[in-house]
Length: 367
Image (cartoon, rainbow, N blue to C red; front, side, top):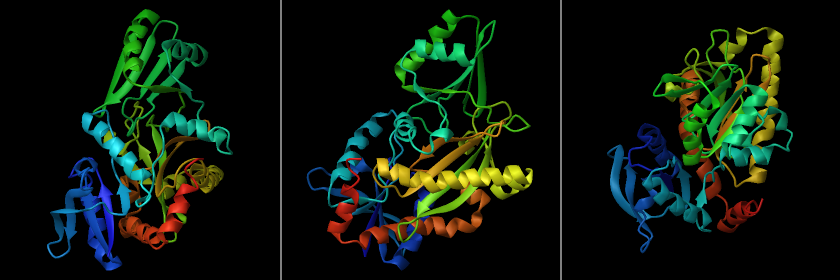
């Protein structure tokens, strides 16, 4: 049996998803194991984790060797445990006897720098590193409206909208599904708030794009790509995410809702719908190859596309550890496909000779 390891930062993370994967594994000749990276014993290099018991139909405590095929579902924060686990995962990725389904993507700024001189450049919002307040104020003077995003952010956390008017500065964000708005009467007051913000966390700066519909709901297109059993990229589904009226975020974790892409495009004029589909198909055709040319191989990509009121189309975010909620809500027929996909791709990798698998990954190490 193939030992297939799944890593998470907490023992109960994504349990329903990982359990569904494990239930189907035995029929494919795979044993599912899950563990937290910090539970690896550095001396014995064995792991205290859980294996899926098919007879009991549940996860049970177990000790085992580090599996040779790993599915990384670790979502890092600024906490001490994340800081402890990150170098352990980096060490695992460096080992020649271990293969990851996907090796992840760098931060948002590095992603922008890697794609800005490619054919996808027209779809990237102009992006700057908000190294100091002078850069932010200069962009505000030039554009009047800008967006601050954490370089390492996820799920929309910590995004700020800044607007300069003749009389004041308006700052808006969303926290715990609530829109929070503040007015600063002058630049001095704004800077008093802004300086600690960018000192404690790294941010990038982008122009504000009007990514909302006629009801003033922010919305975007979420597309899930995965490799199939032959290692070829396949689109699993696409859906529309709508946020709160007057808000900034469309993420479902922030109270957003999902709708079928087909239903949404059916409500548009035919020419506009055809244009959007054509542009998305072009982006999705180019994107995986460009990313894997620059970085280590991937297994799945969540692609967030914004469509502005003027018709322009923008790549808003790329995620190498995407969720499946939007696709499952809007295309429930792909449920079984999503649960099988990591296992089938793991079999594809395991089917390679160790030396072949090693050279497959090594050839991308220095890109």
